[in-house]
Image: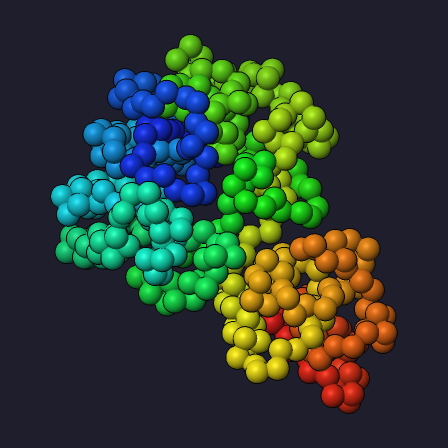
Length: 393
């Protein structure tokens, strides 16, 4: 029996923050809390289908819902294997922490962007005046409560939004939370058709989420996308249809999947200009971000800034080009296979151009072909050029 692997249940779409990168400012849906009765219907049907994971959030702050803990325990008792949610952490009192740790919650992710109050204010605290120090204390108290109860769960994760304004905080952020959290996620968010910053450029990919995720909004509308903040891609309503029928007997959903397979987004306005279609499979690990940050630091420490050739047109190179601390020194990007394309506003050239231009440094950014590329350019060391590797086998 076919089923979604991940079911988002937006238990409320109310929030106590106005984050700069969140589309809530354009939310047209009425603010509401999902009733426990509707929640039970959804979970009962999800359990019958064998849905393994339920995520209790979307475009709201779950800690605002008075039935949150009851919902967690109900879903677990019905046989849902994995239950989690994301939170901004501002409402995590000692009492709420105690209840969550005592509950059957599997994982909690704190979305907190910033190692400093200045960075935090740019993204999450600029309209509300929340103190980053207080939120960090909430999280540390949560860890203490879990230790006091001698429990391994809920697993604690941290999420950080990476932009040109926040990237300087990446390494100290990881140093602070890396040992305390189960995972630290560094993510780049959808700009929602360019409304919230630049749009990612690159190879357009088929969105895989339509094949394994389903989203139930607070009013019961069911959509195919966790980025669909206004339900523009709604395929039905759980109040009047079963979860089984919405997933397995839904001509509208079948048509959406067909259009995605054909990469025909002309009839799907939300998908047409969505950054996420470029981002799947191009995530940045904290290891890669660390390499990028070390490269930036090495360049910025030099009195005489080098003219750099970036060898390798990929997502890490995109991250480098996004950072003004180093992109100004990139003379060109070269690649053996992708010459003729454009990356980060710069033309990707054939490596033969190295014989025609002046430069000081070649930065090799390729895991698979690092050794071959080095053999290709090592003779430039005899001419006084430097060669650095930020990704290698």
